[in-house]
Length: 109
Image (cartoon, rainbow, N blue to C red; front, side, top):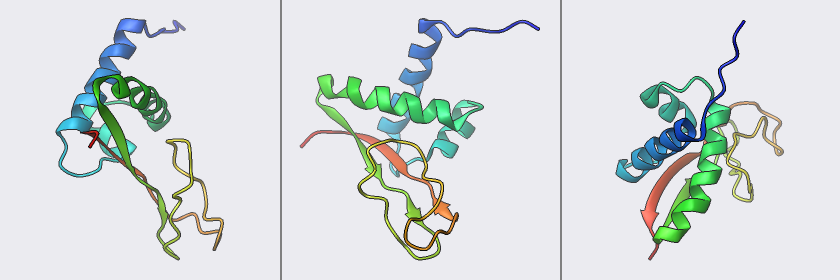
């Protein structure tokens, strides 16, 4: 079995594609949306890339805006999360019905 290792160029291209998609989008996009549009197999890769993108767009006067994840059962909003990934369950009601966080890139005001 041959293991394929992504080069820096491939990762930069993928991140650039994600960043362009988030800049052009009118509505917040979830990692699932991004995976579907860009044919990426793993949402964890997208979450990792969004973290890197958030750091790199600061230099160009832009920022990644996040619509936080929320509980679909009780409405709890995960507003204090510092990581881009999806939470596993609600700390309030313990439900696993979590509405995914959404992302956009916009110019800083």
